[in-house]
Image (cartoon, rainbow, N blue to C red):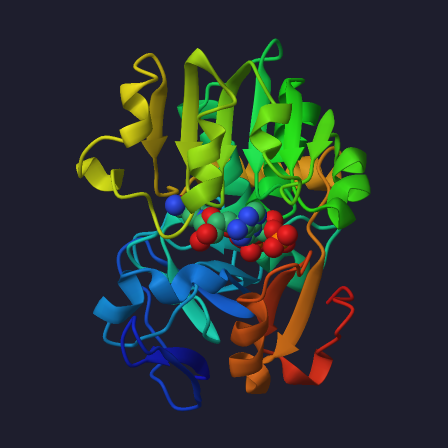
Length: 326
Ligand SMILES: NC(=O)c1ccc[n+]([C@@H]2O[C@H](COP(=O)([O-])OP(=O)(O)OC[C@H]3O[C@@H](n4cnc5c(N)ncnc54)[C@H](OP(=O)(O)O)[C@@H]3O)[C@@H](O)[C@H]2O)c1
């Protein structure tokens, strides 16, 4: 089968295409998906799992059709069904013509969008949902700040925070994205290019940071004394994975803060699929590249100010840069 590979190491990753990898076989209750499109998160070159898998195939976000089941699969999905999936953070290997999934990773694809659009969604949907429901525990009476709001995760979080929960959502993003974020439901938009932007924002119950570094550090100025800061920004802060405490916590002892890695959750994907088909949540804009241009796709996915998610399509013949429906 055809697959993308990341060779080299984290300090010097090399994206290549390979046309002769072995198609994986489903075991136990595995689900084998024929991948039509696979999403890219540019920072995946920094994630450890691809360097520890023998295939070196990256990719956690896919959309396609079910091709086969392992011998003991007894769930509700059917051969030929259109699905999208998040392949667990430890595993990945989605940027290939075929990918193995477990039942808790796969859900019916939203029918109203293309495979390219569906492949852009699993990580952003699941990360935003987990931050909202589990780590931030956001309620309608809360003021919430999301950094990197114009990014894939941020745009889903704005929508969940406002349209699903009804919170006051403050979106931090460059000015060019402000009108789009207001349309998605942001209650307030702030430009990170404004000097001392953190002084324009106060009394925040929950910060959801998707940027990290200086931006994350500044959010400590915005949060209430008993507020919460949740981050997924890459690279993770020095205190992540139980490696110590945040220096800012010394002056803000009541603030709870945490970093997390997104978990698979087929039920959340299934509900998000219904919300998209019902018009409650808007899918992300995507730019699709054919498999043969995988390296170009990865370079594009690592650029700032894109405003869209990058996906690789595996069926070159039906490739459509405008992401038309398959
Ligand atoms: N831990 C996890 O489980 C997990 C899960 C998903 C994602 N992530 C990480 O979360 C981050 C966001 O993911 P994504 O898919 O949303 O990425 P994305 O679509 O590339 O969006 C990144 C966002 O961050 C903004 N940004 C980048 N650098 C910035 C800076 N210095 N100051 C202010 N804003 C800045 C970008 O704004 P501009 O467009 O203006 O540049 C953009 O809005 C990535 O680092 C990703 O690796 C982690």
